[in-house]
Picture: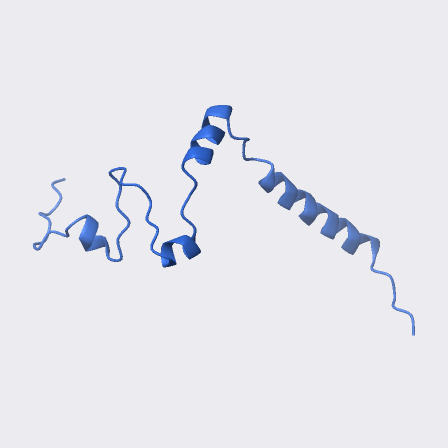
Length: 83
C-alpha cells in the first residue's frame, strides 16, 4: 500500500518552519580570536567534570543551591510605595 504524498501546503509549512529554526540558529556570532584563546586556556567545566570534583575558577560570581546563600533575603516587609 502506497502512502499519499503530503499536500503542497503541508510541505510549504514545513519548509517555513525549517527556515525559522535556521534563522534562530544563525543569529549568534562567531567567537573572536581572543575569546577562542580564553576558552582554549580555560575550558568550561562540564557536568561530568563537576561530578568528578573539578570546580570553575573563582571569579567573584557564585553558583549556589539556594538563592539565600548568594543574596540574603531581608527578614521584614518593604515599606509601602509612596504615590
